[in-house]
Image 1 (cartoon, rainbow, N blue to C red):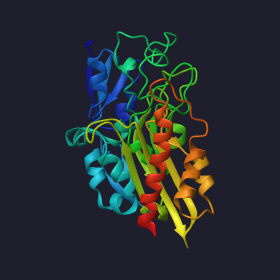
Image 2: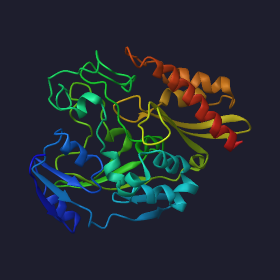
Image 3: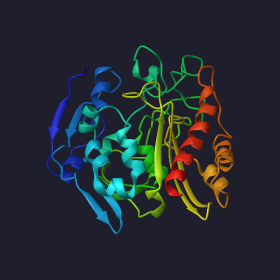
Image 4: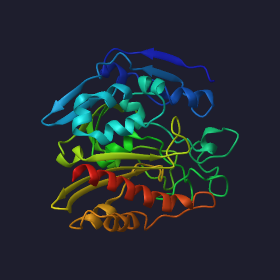
Length: 326
């Protein structure tokens, strides 16, 4: 591991003032420290933000404002989250292990980097680590890789469970930086790889996540999160689905669906949502929505199965939601 300087700060202003090229914020460190050990990340300075007052979960006119340093475990068990947004609680409880959830923070979870084999191993070329060096996953072992939104430069997937639920909830990310405060809709926070796969988010240099905001949403009370993975614990999603439905008189009046494990960012399935509007809440309608969601999917040698798996996961999740919403 490369030697680095550690700067401890007590205020948001102090944190932002201390940043610059080669600097990284650190809180729980559950992803960043691993990347430093693997020689993937090489920060010159770590800015320790664990003392900042960003640990509150606040009622926001029927919605929630959640501080960036709230531990994943605390958020998953928060009474307001469990009542208003069960999909978020389920997503958090499906992530990592209890020990890691105790350390991981909301802000850090959003900033997780891919677990692509080739990105995590500095012995291989990788466009995310070294732009222009190539993407060996395309012709290599690509079982866990993207089937939506990928490019010829990168087919890595975003690993977060929490972020998938937040995408379905149209969450807003509050950030502050050298140029002041701003709000970023979750749909615009993470990037698709395009020709710059090394850039994961739309954060500017020195910007710090301070909180997230979730608006009131009645149908979110009827929501579920399904994660399909190789083992029951401590594994990243092959496919995951966050879904919620507004069903009245047996007819779908509103839907939110987001997918994980399938793209470089949490994937909002707008086509599926549109396909469900005005349709009966039946398995046939749910399968039609799933087909719409995966219309543009492209598989590779080892992950072609994920296309059908994603469709079935969507149907199963919607069926679970409908069972609870009826």
